[in-house]
Length: 321
Image 1 (cartoon, one colour):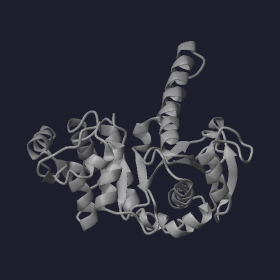
Image 2: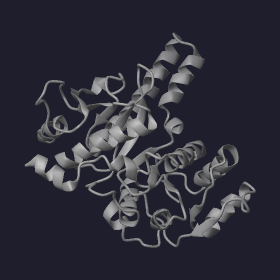
Image 3: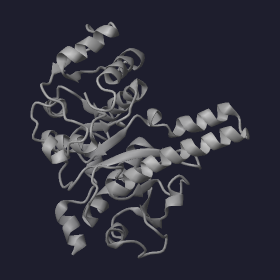
Image 4: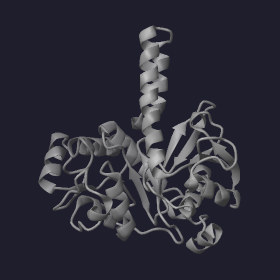
């Protein structure tokens, strides 16, 4: 029911995920609307629907969303918590998804706040994990330290980095450069069992200089959307100038298109949650379902196993003091 185009595009994406990629799906939402969309695709006998009386508006804040016990977000998260669902995917409000997931699924032991991880293609090939990409706008330094460990676990498990290099996004590469939050986080990251590169700057985000880019959720979300917008603008300018092959430009655009990566994994929970872009069309929803299916079956994610390497709340508090 969430996102800018739900439920039409969500249902279409779920049908594609099932038929083209063999991902079993349960749809949660207003049963008459959802079943109507399934009929359009001739899929009423293929995908079960769990009815939800309520849907969380895109503009609603997370804390309020968590109290809507009969919303599609809350019910979807409870299906994961009960084991009836292996993972949860939504294109709804990020804050609402995070709040409902924390309440229904719960955080892994010692995790202070979950974080969104997005794999950004890098200039050197491969990808770098941006974390947090929007789950926690105002984290503490201890939360940032956990984001680093969660991101490193994700890089090991999903990207295959044996010893991921972690960088902290700041306004300068020199030690001690940045605002109070980044400076305190830098001290914590330097004390953790990580390959800590130190500070990186905005122009390093797509360079492949590090495997994990750590930042707060506010900055991370701005960075993510800025990357998407800048890539689209730059490629449009190159295409207009006629100085590159249209096929090559399309390939570069595809690498940075949200439709390609599907969504962001919400790390630090006892179950798998993927948050898709609010403007996701059917193809992106299908990709998000594929991603969630793969993560749910991965022995090193869950995302509980990635969180197992995170500092406990007590350890984080000790480091801060």
